[in-house]
Image (cartoon, rainbow, N blue to C red; front, side, top):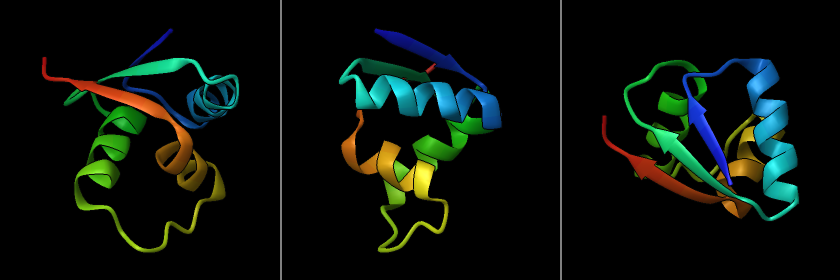
Length: 68
């Protein structure tokens, strides 16, 4: 299990690794950075995400979002 609070590009690489290992990822909403980006992408579900890492995380990740 992985907890994401905020996050940057390095965190995205670590979250991508966790997703590929099929670890659940708990994302704290409204904590900034990557966490907010993932929450927004999950909520609105665009048809295309230009960043391949974010696309894989949102498509394949076992993401669980927590409100602060």
